[in-house]
Length: 164
Image 1: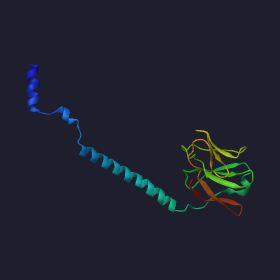
Image 2: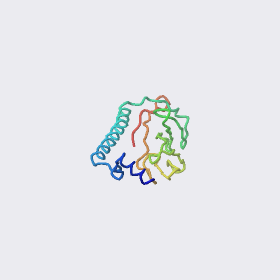
Image 3: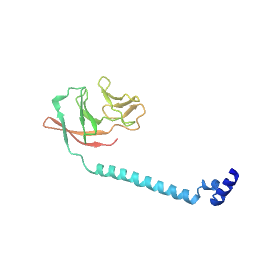
Image 4: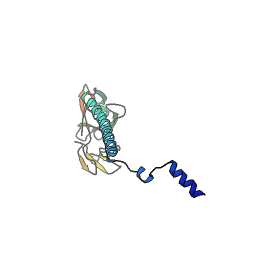
């Protein structure tokens, strides 16, 4: 009796189930074009946003006073926004340099090693030169972004950044 029920059901719904799972080349191509177009549109948005932010010069921000740092010391600050950690370093020579504090490998925070005048990333053993920001060791693909500094009336100002 169950064979009769299956036969009746198949007559009422004549669907070839094996062919139902196949997708035509035209449908597959349409799907690829739509997904690719969405990816281009999404990436274009982020690219335009980065380009627009690069066109707007960052305002000068006072970081501290010249006498606040002795040679070999570091001062942490935020620049150009509160979400961007940075560090001001007074080298042993007395010169001031400032860098973004995120490693260019995976954005881990870098730390200043005063005895060797290097910036070290503890996550993956990345090492940068404190004078130039250049990569000395490890996996970082590019130097640290440097922040331009100026000194006026004994005060140190951050006045923009140089992309790595």
